[in-house]
Length: 69
Image 1 (cartoon, rainbow, N blue to C red):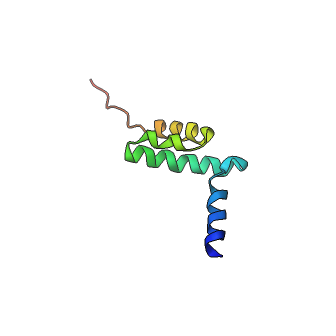
Image 2 (cartoon, helix red, strand yellow):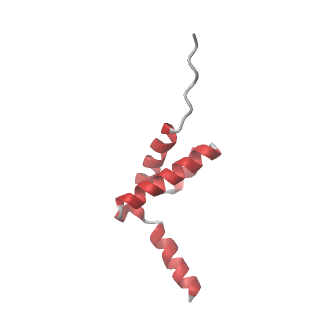
Image 3 (cartoon, helix red, strand yellow):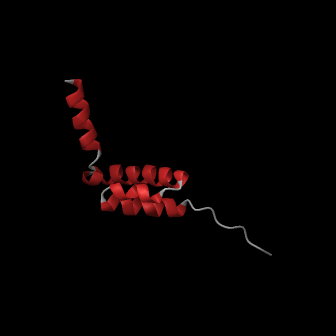
């Protein structure tokens, strides 16, 4: 019984498109993880909207190069 409940909760968590705030949070977390692991290819397994937003998040986290004088 607990397995079935956990499985249903996991499936519900994989569909963030119904709630924009969940989709944004999911994209931020996965974008951050992909940037830290330097593995943007891992974002391909997510829904297209989440993957695109996560890629934008990871691009914002890029460390700018220091200015040369």
